[in-house]
Amino acid sequence: MLDQPMPTPSAPTLDQNALARALSGHHFIGGRFVPAQSGRSFAVHNPATGAEIARAAEGDAADVDAAVVNAAAAQKDWAKLPARKRGALVSQCAALIGTHAEELARLIALETGKALRTESRVEANVVADIFSFFGGLGSELKGESVPFAPDVLSVTVREPLGVVGAIIPWNVPMLLMALKIAPALVAGNTVVVKSAEEAPLAVLRVCELMNRILPPGCFNMLSGFGPECGAPLVAHPKVRKVTFTGSVEVGRIVAVAAAEKLIPVTLELGGKSPMLVFADCDFEKTVMGAITSMRFTRQGQSCTAASRIYVERPIFDRFVAALAEKVNAMVMGDPLDEKTDIGTIISEGQFEKVKSFIAEGAATPGAKALVCSALPTDPALKKGLFLQPHIFTGLTRESRLVREEIFGPVTCVFPFDDAEAVLAEANDSEYGLAASLWTNNLKRGLDLAHRLEAGLVQINQNLVVQANLSYGGVKSSGLGKEASLEAMQEHFTHKKTIMVNYG
Ligand code: NAI
Ligand code: MG
Image 1: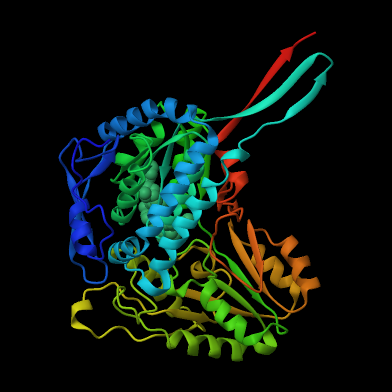
Image 2: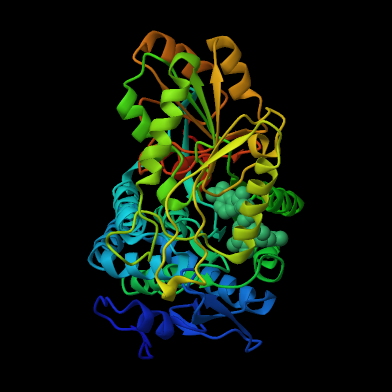
């Protein structure tokens, strides 16, 4: 039972500004809202207006220690619960998150600038689905019996790792958190999450909701900056596993710190995902597929965004024109307005970064950008981080726009003539997260799917990550898998062998 009244409403609320203020200035440790021990906090902004909507507790090593100590204390009893009981509790969290889905959607739209109708509502519902999926998998934490020798019973059992440290980014913060904590908890671990500095609010509300069902300390949430709060979480001696989503640069730092402690690490580090369009594709479906694949409704702020599109030459011009026409019709505006298709970029830093890529593309001789979608005219949004989608043609393969992750509404389209050559080009990347192929020749599609260097290849569709889909990259896109049964078994437990000699 909680011994303090929560500052937040217990019933779902649609007043996202009031909820943001109520969550302001808190970590969530051991079942309670607490401020940073240092007393410091930092501003959280609405990227559509520039207004400060809340403060976030500025965590450091002292807060990390308090959260990890709480998680470690809770872990022993949590792990003693039968796995199916843990799963049932996580399923109850799914139901409660579902009840609060509209509230969470509005809050995430407020703090990230992602459009409510096209993005934020989808995220909130997928979060409930991920909890529900993993909640049903408690009985899958089973081991094997091994035919070792006569009179020897040899079995394996799966045991939790202990306290899991999870570090998440801002683009789909609730969803990426769910992918980490739902399997970790069902497997008998307890968790400390470090939220992204740009989006600490909706995840904090999810945490408080879960705390109504799970024992205190099972799940703890810290806000703060990477080096001051994320790094001490990875380094803490009681953290026995780290799971991270974010940039390659920070992923490497996290992996090195985990290696120092010899603890396992899961990394999801983004991509430069190719989309291959053949002339025999279903044209209209594929044009719409390019919009989905590029995640234009999320301003391209997605690790699986199809930021390199290769189109077979006979349909190249028609395809680029049709794509630009469709993107142009998308409505950019207030993320909380039901009419809005495209909201804002997350932060000024990302805004400037994406603009620098656009400037470099625009300055490239021979390159051309189709600039789509009108900027909003509402004076209330004049400080908003709105950025028009850019479709580049005529870039060289060596361009930074073609090689680096932009994480913005910018895609590069190239014509191709030969399937083998385009396959080589698609694979010529540091990344290997996702890829899609669009063709009605499934023989060719499947052949190429097997030879594309990516963790997830889709033919004639390009869905975002979902429950039950093994998800994770090769090459610099990361290590390990998320979202699937395998992810829970392989990344949140270890196998112990027990042998009994009864001869
Ligand atoms: P980032 O990798 O710096 O941040 C991700 C998380 O790591 C945040 O919670 C951050 O506080 C934390 N962090 C930062 N430094 C840390 C450290 N030394 N130790 C532990 N934790 C640390 O990503 P950022 O700056 O938000 O975005 C930069 C680029 O990264 C984007 O433009 C995009 O290309 C990529 N990115 C990829 C994502 C993905 O889904 N794979 C998500 C977000 C960003
Ligand atoms: Mg960073």
